[in-house]
Length: 366
Image 1 (spheres, rainbow, N blue to C red):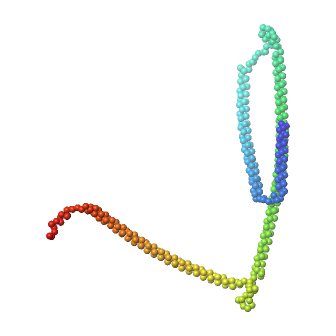
Image 2 (cartoon, rainbow, N blue to C red):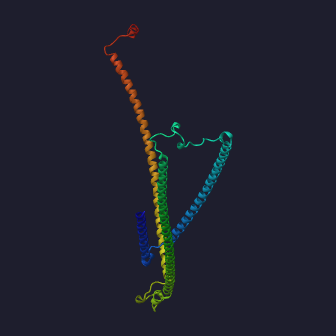
Image 3 (cartoon, helix red, strand yellow):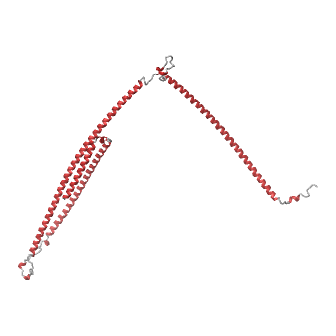
């Protein structure tokens, strides 16, 4: 038990030292303004704080619901147990009354045994005492039983003392753990309060920094707008930038200029130049349009000529096909006639006399 207590103390001390080291490191990080301000997202931090708060509320509500449910279950179990005990008690009372009623019956009220026999008052013929019998056996047995009862009571007392010592040690250890838990809770509350205060301080510093940056940006923008307006006004009103063209006119004529004082053309001259340029551009457009029209007409002429040539070619092709067809038919007929002649010549190659040859005799005028 002592070793267990010492081990628990060592673990608790190590945990507290680790917590203090983390708190000190976190404090050092908060004291570093560069690391604290660079990359800080206030909206994200606010969302994280809100999420943690909602998670804690949800956990607290869940614990409360679970506690209420456990209490309800405990009440139901206690009610069931009370009903069971009442039923058992009623059953035991009924059984006791039944046993008492049975015990009052005449057959159960008779004496169980008669007057005990005293061996000292009996002779040898009674068979209650024999030679060599141990007369102090009962006394010795009673003494041994009394000794066993004393030893048993002593062992029970020792066990009860040890149990009481264990319970007392457990109570002391429980009190120690309760004190440690209380101290831990106080330290955690203090740490939470310190962290909350540091977060509020960081938030205030971030807000002040953001306001300062916003004010500086607003001032810079106002100054930039003012400078731009001044520059625009200077450009519009400066005689150096807006060169007067009348300064370059010659004293001899309004249409002549001094090359050394020439400041550019006037607005009327520029407008006249633009008008001439527009005329030239219009003429170019007109010439291009006429060229396009000529090209289009020539294209249509080429299309018509191509169409006529195609029609002529198709007509000539049809004529050639027709002539070729006639020629092929004529050749086929010639081949047929040639074949017939060849067959007839083959037939007449050895000569023959038919009936017509003899019919010609005697028919002459001679």
